[in-house]
Length: 308
Image (tube, rainbow, N blue to C red):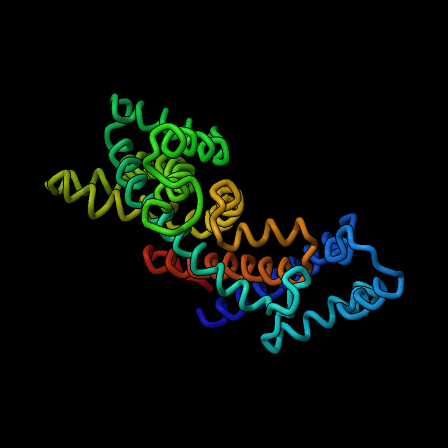
């Protein structure tokens, strides 16, 4: 087990390294420059432009810029924002991360609490009206883009009814719409997965044996069906973290949510290299750690699995 964890950690470090190189290269290849955004429409001389470029190290080759950034990251220094002049990137990310974390945790909890029971019940009562309604609802949830749902919620609950604020994170009401949008897609996927896993578990020999022994149906479902149906659900939760985080970027932009997603979107638009690199590194690390934890939990739930 220890050998497996060490190998996975090393693989994760390699993945993070490659992701950071790719994101840095894409930002370098994008048209425009942070200096152009800093200057704006101000009348400056070529000497001033050269001084600004040199101050931020933008006159050096990209590999030197990346090497300097990587060396600083190892020491915990993510640099300073080009656009918000002099503000440490670490402070900007630390300010936005808790907001995004709360949003994602709430959305995932809502999705799991609602979707898993719905999927299990649909799997037990296959081809019933409940099964048909839940699966139609999950199909709609997967098919509709989350940004469209967000805009529709703003129109209905903010502009028409005036029940919820359309933007910001000032009160608990501000969480309702963005959490609902993020949770909707996850609920649709988890419900379908739970239904399929439950239906498959019900057809296994151990369920037939348990019923033949005289176990009550509730005991068969809770002890045998649900436990085994949880295996693919736990597996997919780790991988869904990446999609949830990417969805957060869109949702935070729609609802003007002051989190990591909005910060990343604004930083890409303004070519603030340091901020983009820090956020990409953070998101890649979260995905790698989530996948590692998922594998370990998977082995714990199913004693038959032994990670070599």
